[in-house]
Image (cartoon, rainbow, N blue to C red; front, top):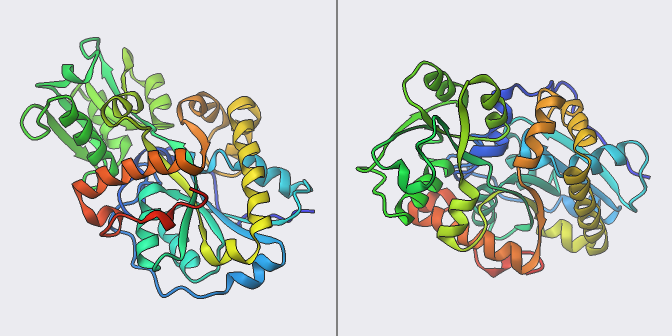
Length: 355
């Protein structure tokens, strides 16, 4: 029988916060996922890890954390089923958090066994803990989209001479945008004007005020923006643009786990991964049910928004060599832009569980 504990006091995430999980989650450590899960090189430096997870894992229990936003959408069906008596052969102790810096200390000190976090934060934790953190799966692909109020932008090349309103300066969204522009022959510093705002809501307000007609925003904010601004449309899916440029898929979120927790009970961890994969499948097939859970657990403020956004949040469950290929390519781009965004060095092969 599974046991679930969802931290009390968490209320439904405001739309702006839910963004972080989807889209900006990218810089190095503490996401803001410009989404709320957008880590950047600003995450707090972790403390020396301990081995407190061994006893917990040995008891067939897993302490898992999630962030409000897309990186936890694929996990929520498992969380709810476990909370309602689903039998998976292990106990699930789940907690939800609004920011990555709430998770980092617990993960480092061994108070958590696993967590769904922004991809670059995973790399940073690996370096800071001396390899005590591994990535087990990619759970969210890119959630960034370029929107236009008009119909002039049909390709990345059409952005030349344009002004792009966005968020995430010095974090993953900026690095992704600059990489895609450069790969398409545009100089990010001279061929386009990029105006950064602290929140996606600010960028949208500027769009509505006529300060520009083009913006790069994350899901689920994109879904909300499309319903608020007349004539606004998705001009470029950054997942497609990234794949054409990099030859791999754009990554936003991952599942990480402490190495000692995995080694203490490999069978329990594998059982958890199997259940997680099934939960992800449910998130992509039962949109209505998953959306209701997203509202119930505070991942997104409203189920209606979640239901519309889910298909565009690119919830996946990638493991093994596929995970390693997509994630390593992504991290290399971030490293080339700013080594600090991935902890100062590219992770070695031991970082990739099962690959």
